[in-house]
Image (tube, rainbow, N blue to C red):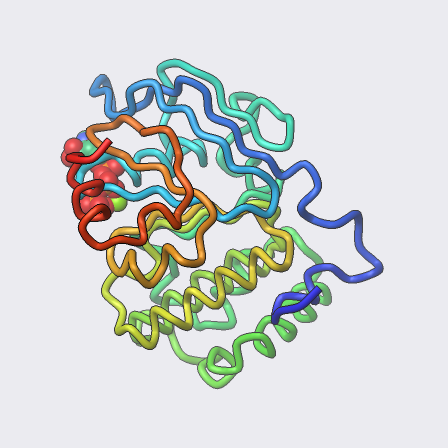
Length: 257
Ligand SMILES: Nc1ncnc2c1ncn2[C@@H]1O[C@H](COP(=O)(O)OP(=O)(O)OP(=O)(O)O)[C@@H](O)[C@H]1O
Ligand SMILES: [Mg+2]
């Protein structure tokens, strides 16, 4: 295998991390309080696939991610990961299943240093294993190595997203979900974050990626795309079908089918 995250599959570790890392949602309903937002959402992400969700502001993309990670209750439907019924797992327990989440907001702890942000992801591990993994991650991201003593709140947007992705990858997830990890970044930084995401997949992670800005830069790296509009998800289509500016524009605003 290739890529900077190749250390994720060390010979001394269990089977390849992609095994069984299959996410399935069927007719999922969820929302805030009594307010329904997701209306019968069905979605599949297969092992080592990169699947994107696109759609306009307020469509329900973040609500979908929060629902998958157990941060919102479901009103109906089923969700499973690696053959396990997610209803039986708390939000924290889903991390134990190998699910990692880079949220749209508050993806790092601003008061903590870069090093301590990485350590927070590994709190349940012995100190020596923590130090080993952090050392490896700082080699994968040398820029973070230089910033190891800086507080996350002082980082640039691109550096913060790098830290957020590193904090997720350091847990060696089987499933990585990212909510708009490139929004607000300069194109060159977007390219660097896309590289991190594709390398995560090369390391065997299954990826669910909410894209809003820079779709023409991101979509060439995606296998399939679901479009969300008003809490409903379309059937997926190959990402290559959407690499046309006009069609993409129409799709974003729910004009095309
Ligand atoms: N905490 C909340 N309480 C009540 N309604 C909410 C809450 N958060 C979001 N909503 C509503 O849920 C709907 C979907 O919001 P969501 O954040 O999932 O959209 P999104 O597709 O992620 O948008 P964006 O592209 O702007 O991030 C919106 O109508 C929003 O107003
Ligand atoms: Mg959102």
